[in-house]
Structure formats: C-alpha cells, structure tokens
Length: 334
Image (cartoon, rainbow, N blue to C red):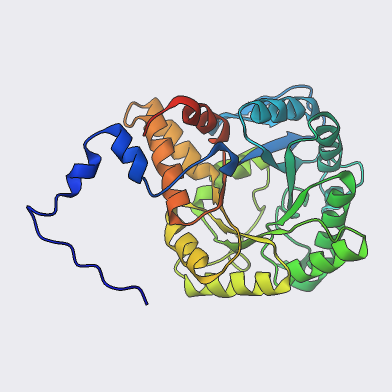
C-alpha cells in the first residue's frame, strides 16, 4: 500500500510554483498524448465514385474504396498509423450476407489499402448491423436477436476480413461468447497471429446518433438495449472485460469514451491489458456544432477531451479528430 503523503501548508506549499511557465508545465506534465495513440475511423460505401460528407459529422465522409486509400495515405503522412473500417453495402438482407462476402465492401477496401498503404494498421469492425435489412447486430429469431446463431455469422465475417488482409479484428456486436468463437475461428483458419480488439464495455448510448447516419445502420425497430450495456452500470463492465480477456481478447475497448471515463479508469486499474477507448460520433459532433456556433474554442476543447481520455487510462483512442489532432500535436503547446 502506498504511503499517505502529507504536504506542508501554505505558504510553505505553493503548487502554483510549477505552473509559472510553459517549460515547467511541460516538465511535470503527467499525461502524454501522441499521434500514434490515434485510430482513425473510415466509412466505406459500396458503389460510390467519390467521397461524400456526412451531414451530422462535419469533416467526416462516406468514402469510395479509392478515396479511403487516399485518406489512409493522408493519415500516415500525419503520423496516424491505424484506421478502423466500417462498411456500407449496396445490398442488405436478413442475415447480413455482405458482411462475409469475399468481395464485399470491407474485404475489397482492406485489400486495396494493404496493397497501396501497407505500412498502416487496418482494423475491421466485425458486426452485422450495417449489413442486415433490420439494422440489428445479429440474426433475428421471432423478432429477437439470437445470440448463439449470430456467433456463427460473426466468425464468418471475422475470417473473411483476415483473409482479405486485416491486421486486427474488432468485434462490436456485444453477443455473449463472441470473442471465444472468433478466436477459435481465426485459429482454425490459420490466423492465430491476428489480434482481437474486443468492444468489451459497449454501452447503449444516445451518443451514437451521427454514426448511425454515417454507417446507415439504425435499427428498423426497437433498440439494442438487450445486448449493449446499461449506462447505469459499472461493475458489469468489469465482468464483461474479464470474460473477453478470458476468451482471448488481446485489446479491450470502452465505448463511448467521454461519458465513461470512470469505466476506462476502472478497467485500466483492474486488468493488465491494452485499453482502447472510442471517442464516438456524438462526442465529435457536439464539439463541432458548439464550435461552429462560437460557443467554445473547438480546437482547445478537442485536445482537452483527448487528453482526458488518455489520462483516464486509455492506451489508444479511436477518434474522428485523429487527423485534426495530429496537426495540432505537431506544433502546439497545451
């Protein structure tokens, strides 16, 4: 147990002494933020000829395969070395068949990125919500997402991504047992070296709204509260993380980030494993809209949020601010 530190009283103790200039503040800063901490999300849409800006996410686009490759080149030039891909297929059905089509939008995009920008780490989101006609994250049985049947389809999707060249598989569906199923499936397909980044503590959140526009993945009925977590719970997050680690997760994730800094902190303190946090679409759009209205300094708010996520314990941050923040980090002072 750490010894309790008793500080002398004022005026012997003056904490402002070490804040007196920028150099001192830099010397004693407790949290570092690096461009290599960022993972940049990309939306890729089947059949698009060029990129199209997302109405609710200024500066973020639905991409064609070609523009996604160019965006990866831009990211790498700024020092951002990882992207996570979300696919929007031309055709959707009850079983999300395009999710595991060897020539599906994600599979094609992965191959093109790895051919043209091989240095960048490509993470693929594994879920069915973008591919199902009903918009839910699994296979329906009598109107309810069937957990165990869904696992079979998630494994197919994960293996197809690995075959296309994905560097990391990231299941976001929140089905029980999916990490074990995917790990076994990858190993059987001779992809034992591919890491799994588990969306372990993914909450049912109102902050996903802009993402659902971007990924065209809103559920057509009901909601996702039977599989995504209740935002009132924190101990449950630790159980979810524990089970995912036990099932073979290499990296775990907390999503969203900003309203769940306490969860990030608890997870990091409880488990010796890399922790990712997803700075989600609603968090991004709030900053952008407030900045556009002149209510806040958008750049400063962006950096404050990213530092807070890192300070809470995240080792890596999935963020739509990745390229913008990378530019700031190159020549800014906090």
